[in-house]
Amino acid sequence: MDSNSENYLILTEKELIFLLKSDDKRAFEQIYHTYRVRLYVNILKMVKSEEDAEELLQELFVKLWMVRHKLDPERSFKAYLFKIAENLAYDFFRKASLNKKLENHLVITASNNSNNVERYINYKESDLIFSKAVATLPPKRRQVFILCKIEGKSYEEVSNALGISTSTINEHIVKASRAVRKFFLLSTHVS
Image (cartoon, rainbow, N blue to C red; front, side, top):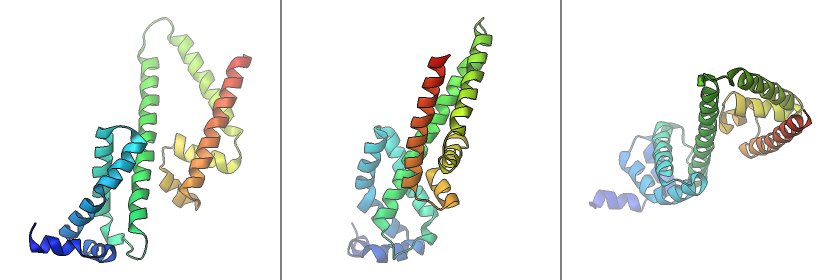
C-alpha cells in the first residue's frame, strides 16, 4: 500500500464522500473496502445465495458510483448503503417472482396436449378470482399491491410516487398478499 492510499484510511466518512462526489476513484475504493464485507453479509442473509449476494454487492457499488454526485455528506452514509442493499434484494425477489410467473405461464401455453382447454379455463378462472381478490383490498393497499406486484415497480419507486415509506409499502404488500391468498383459497374451495 503506498502512502497516498494510507492517507485515505485516515479520512472521515464525510471527507471520503466529498472526494467521491468529485470523481475520486481512490475514495470509492476506500469506501468499497470499508463496507463490502458488512454489506455482503447483510445481502447474503437476505438472498441466501453466495453467487446472488456477490452480484447484488457489485450492483450496489455500480449504483453508488452512478449516483455519487447526488450523495448528501450530511446524511448517514452507512444507512444509505444498507438501504440500497435492501432495495436491491427486494428487486431481486420481485424479478425472481415475475420470472417464475412467466415460466408458469409459458408451461401452460406451450403444452399441446388435450388438457390445454381445461388449463386455459382454470387459468382464466384463477385470473378472475385474483382480480376479485385485489378488488376487495382497501384502496391504498390495492394501489400499492397493483404498483408493486402487477406493474412490477420497486418499493422505492412506489415510495417516491405515493409519499410513504418502504416499510409501510412492505406492510401493505404482506397484508395484501395474505388477503389475496385467503380469498383465493376460499373461492377455490367453495366451487
